[in-house]
Image (cartoon, rainbow, N blue to C red; front, side, top):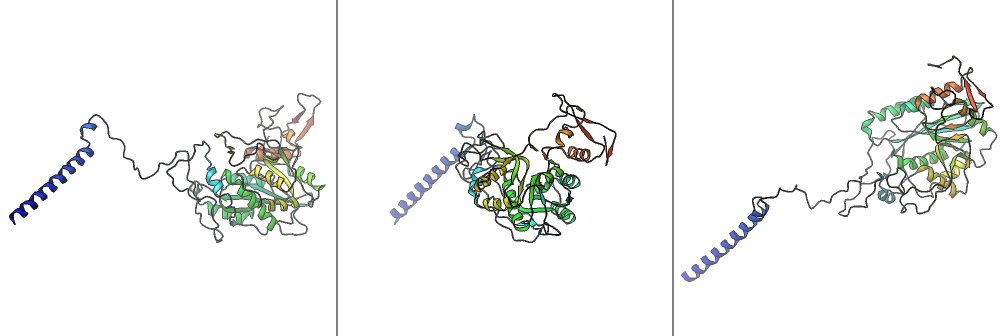
Length: 410
């Protein structure tokens, strides 16, 4: 018995000694005072279990705005990226093309503010519907459009109607109480269309297809449509004169048409499109800049075509693809000046446009709010006149007379 007890005690002692030795070695290896780390600073603590997120990749999530109309939300176009231990390829574009391609078929969003009575027939069908792309923050631009070229009413006895196209703001905190403000604006003017998608540059295509679907459903009786940005000046009298001699039952798509445009492959560009998204070397013809005109029948055809064409992040090009789908060639018109501003030849002290040059145009792009207001007042003042000169260097000049137009004195 003593022999067995002695052997058990020896085994226990050896096991305890082995355990203490292992523990000592472990402590020596992890201790910051070890001999191997005396001359080194400790590295920053970083979890090895979590993948590092690439600095250029943004996880895009769809906001969860509070409902205005009580309609059930549709699925968002963006879903949160799943984390992966493999970092995607480096790109300087802020747009997540991988996520866009993954969710390109999610294109149905509910309307939060609607204007179903906008095109109701009174004596005659609406002749022209003005549709202006805008964002929630641009209250001042919508107001200047309402007071100047975008007025509802009649021109030459023809009915003019107006709507603004909005999405949910990307950063809702920048506009305090935006839902209340937009709701009040809609109740006051009855011209707001708001959809439940994030209003970003690459989501303008969503705005395009949702407007076409809305117009086909609620405004199918309209003769013509002008669709443009909220930074343009439109000479509505010239537009009406141009359209009066045309039939709304015939195809019409007119604007500043861009032909033979190539996809931009420069990753730093705002319009960068990778080959995986568009492999062809040239875009179809499309209307660029601030606006275009189309007939009611063309609108109906485009509303159907946009359901059959895959979404593309540049809305102008996407609409060109839809035109190609219905085999309709857009027509270029010199009255649409959507790129560049002509500086005045005879009055350099005035804003950077020549009212006489623009008097015979239909659409002028990229103007400030003050310039839109001044342009409209000048062209609607009886004392304002333009005189043509025979000089080739200065084909136009305009006579300045003392006149008061509203709150602006020229």
